[in-house]
Each structure stands twice: as C-alpha cells, then as structure tokens.
Amino acid sequence: MILTPDNEYAVVLDACVLYPMPLCDTLLRLAEEPAFYRPLWSEGILREVGDTLESHGRSKEQRDRRLGVMREHFQEALVDIPEEMIKAVSTTLPDHKDCHVLAAAILSKSRMLSSRKTSNISRQNVLRNTEFFATTQTIS
Image (cartoon, rainbow, N blue to C red):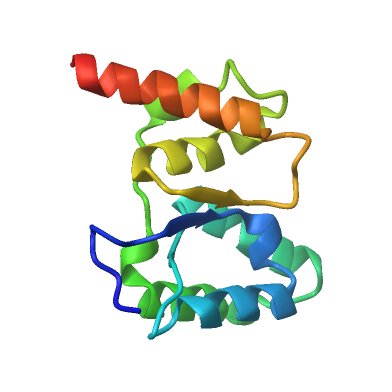
C-alpha cells in the first residue's frame, strides 16, 4: 500500500508501545514500505522512550542510536506540539504526563492512538477532545 493523504492511516505510538523492543520492532516493520500505516510521535514521546531505555540499563549511546534510527527512517513521524495545546488538553486527563500524547493525536488528526495505558487515555477522552479541537479549528 502506498500511503497518500487520501488513504493514509496515521497512528500515534505512545512510548509504552515503543519501549518493549519486540512490540516496537513489529509496529515499525508494519510501517515500512509497503506500509500498513504511518507512525506518528512527538519529541515528548521519544524522550519517554529514551528515559525508559536508560532506566532499564541501556547506555546513553544505545539510547541515542535507537532514537536516531527511528528519526532517520521515519522522518515524517514527528508531530510538533505547541505548549499551549498541551495546556489545553491537560484539563481532561487524569494523568497530566500524558497530555502531549493526546495533543499529538489531535494535532496530527491521526486515526488511532496506540497505547497500553488505557485507563489514562480513554476512548471517551480522545473522542471528546478531538471533536472539541476539530470544532475550534473550524471556527477559527
């Protein structure tokens, strides 16, 4: 499948699905050509992946290499999130540390958010926030 803006299936990948290497490897292989979907993440998500790698005994060099390879092979995956957007989303989530993940999903207009933290980012929160920001963008 060749992804175009008309048929792309974009997915924000949370840090908790990018850390366990077998899961990360599977997800990123599915995003290689011929891609089943387009992966998306933010600098905050990559920072969390790096911190998790180091907390599980990986060296700074291993951390930098892994994140560098991800950035190199999926250059279009990075979603830039303004601080104002993170603050706007922060009122709706029980864990404020995950606001940047939801903000990435909203800004990128992704079709899905892949996370193992289902209690923090519920379908209801994602839908409610996506609808709110879609309405806000239409009005402005």
